[in-house]
Amino acid sequence: MQSDATSWIELYPLAQANLRRRSELQAIVGAKAWRWAGWLTRLARSYGMLSAVYANEHNHWPLATAEAPLYAFAHKKFHDVPAITIYMLARPLTHFHHVTIIGQAGIHSAVYPYTEWIPGFLKAPLLDPFAVQAARILSWPIKDLFNSVNTYAVYREQDMPATVAQYESIHFGGQRILGMDYEAYRQMARQKTRSSLVRVMQDISELNRSLVIAPEGGYCFDGTIQKMQDFLAFTALKKNRRTLPCTISYDELCPDTMGRIDCYVHTGAPLDPPAGKTDTQRWSQDLQRILTQNTTIVASQLIAAVLWKHRAQGRIGVDELGAQFHQLAQRMSAISHLQLAPGLLTSKTRERSLRRFLRSVGRKWLRRRGSTYIYNQDKMDSFTAKERTVGNLEWNYNHIAWLVADW
Image (tube, rainbow, N blue to C red; front, side):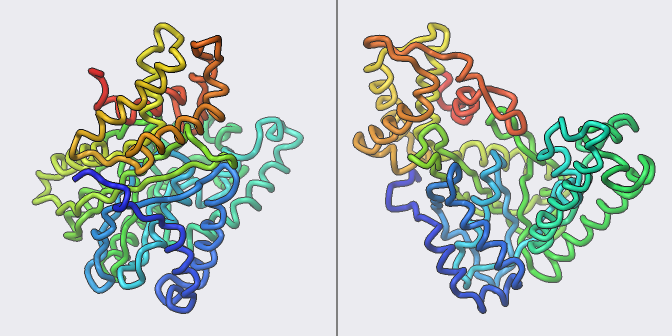
């Protein structure tokens, strides 16, 4: 059933209300997780982050006395961390399970801040010892945060350096960061991964915690939902737990005056576990399809689709942009199974979204000449390398490419 404006609830006030119930929430998650949840909730509303997080179909959250479900989130961008924090924190305490998480191994050491945050010029031979020390200091709060929510390190082959040279390079840090040679690192990674998977399984079965996971294993860098990894299917099978598929959508081309964007989380109907080992591939394919088709349609995707349609010409009429945006929104609203953001449901709210785009991202992408917008292709093709491999225009278009390919 298609969402209407009343089916969406804003989660930030609910998350704040739960934080104020300090003793009750700490009894579930502990004092350290409560403190970090408060910090991440404040971060979520800061400049350039999230103006609001909305959810629908929240009736799928089970009671705390029931078996904890597994939460499968389609991973999109850095904003996922505060968005998922608010989503999980907003659950009524009567429906609140603590969580267990599988995390990329680098976040449990100084490797992540060294590779992601320390600029390259600081890794020159004379300065590298200071860069290493800075990375170690930066890693302390990161490890504290993830330990507070029962995050266990998993070393995936695709994330690990394949050679000694890659291990010792400035792109990883090697022995300078981890204090062990390459072979010792490989052995430690195998042992740590096995231990982490065992502990996650124990958290689910013995402590009734919800596994929170990005089943794709990381970002899908072009904006689509990529193939599911096997772990979630086998966990659902082994522990006989249902999975809640949660698709996150960002209206990132239409920020407010503080550069913040709206976030929408659609919670799909619970997915029963696979029927057996031979059913896991079918189950994972179904999950991928559900996460794709449950994408909430937002103004940014429709604006991107209109601009994408005219990319060969490199221009679009001023009135044509608005008219086709409204036309496409009306077409989407006629498809009963789609989830539409409330801002697309009336011409007035659509105009508001279009104005937001034109005064922010549109100022960089489009140059007006009389009654025509001329494309700035370089700006449209720009992207954050750590999150994407395609331009921001294409990334937003790809979320609904499967819907509008014949438009």
